[in-house]
Length: 186
Ligand SMILES: NC(=O)c1ccc[n+]([C@@H]2O[C@H](COP(=O)([O-])OP(=O)(O)OC[C@H]3O[C@@H](n4cnc5c(N)ncnc54)[C@H](OP(=O)(O)O)[C@@H]3O)[C@@H](O)[C@H]2O)c1
Image 1 (cartoon, rainbow, N blue to C red):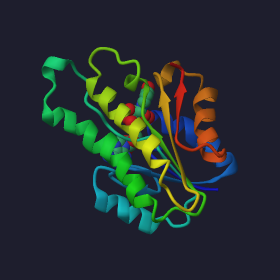
Image 2: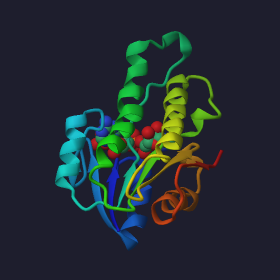
Image 3: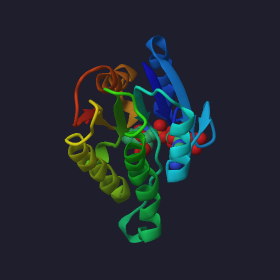
């Protein structure tokens, strides 16, 4: 399979990449690193990426910043960091990428436990992750040409056995599931 891994140089990306390359052709992309540069907060940059990397079977996104801070410090500008990068960034990857992905391809997005089990100072992550879950559920009903979509919703990655994290992404990419939120280490 040809897999486009966005955010490959991040903490999750670094865990996934060595496993994925065992059986797949992996193209790495990131804002400042990888085989291709992309800023998922910029739709032109996403379109350019899909024009450059052709013949993709699976698109995995493990990228997207969010503001961390308490309710009192939160304002529209800080909320917009997560909305623009992690929420709309991943949504736009799908809206644009659906036109480029191979038949029977898949999108695997990354959300996080804060959607369901928030802790203090993570309101932005909570709403962004929750929005991603709703997007995946609804979008899975409409994607065409056999394309599937799922979200991986991990707890704190440093506390998750690498095996569990890797398997959750492989389940989405190599399996047949569609419209699932895979919760890892809740
Ligand atoms: N780590 C955790 O415990 C955890 C738990 C649950 C959910 N998550 C979620 O999983 C995702 C990845 O987490 P992580 O810990 O691996 O993050 P990370 O270590 O900060 O790495 C993020 C990666 O994404 C890239 N990136 C960030 N914004 C981008 C953008 N706008 N366009 C393109 N690439 C961008 C970064 O590239 P550059 O370095 O080149 O900028 C980097 O390679 C995040 O959305 C995070 O919220 C993480």
